[in-house]
Image (cartoon, rainbow, N blue to C red; front, side, top):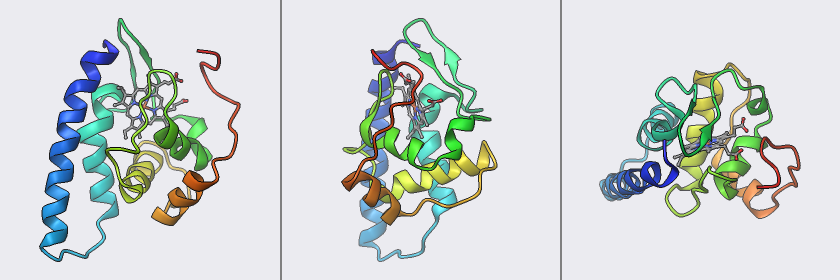
Length: 143
Ligand code: HEC
């Protein structure tokens, strides 16, 4: 899939999703729904590129890696750093996702499409954001 064709609907949906979120918090909803929230973020945002089964794809414009069965996700910092900083065709999400939503979607991807132990919290994403560790290991370094 062409990178730009992919990203535009994604941004529109993300704006819609955050409008819904603002309403939720105005209603005083305090229950934490991390697994559902993670699935919602995945379906509304990540799935457009990584596909519903998280197996990625080989579009004309960009090669999208699989997130299912991906050993790189064993390291919690790796997907968190990707979401905070982006890389190549992978956009960063600091403007459209809260740290809590990032934690939720990382837990969903690590737990649902893989079976890695450990949970990423909002505070964990805060920590990675304020002190990003260098991650020289990547698929397409140099582009
Ligand atoms: C606009 C398309 C697009 C969207 C939307 C997108 N990604 Fe990606 N993603 C990519 C591309 C392209 C790469 C490969 C980047 C590279 O290595 O150059 C990638 C790489 C990744 C990787 C690293 C995989 C690896 O093996 O190195 C992770 C983790 C990831 N994405 C998670 C997510 C999550 C979680 C979301 C939803 C919040 C998301 N992505 C949304 C396009 C996208």
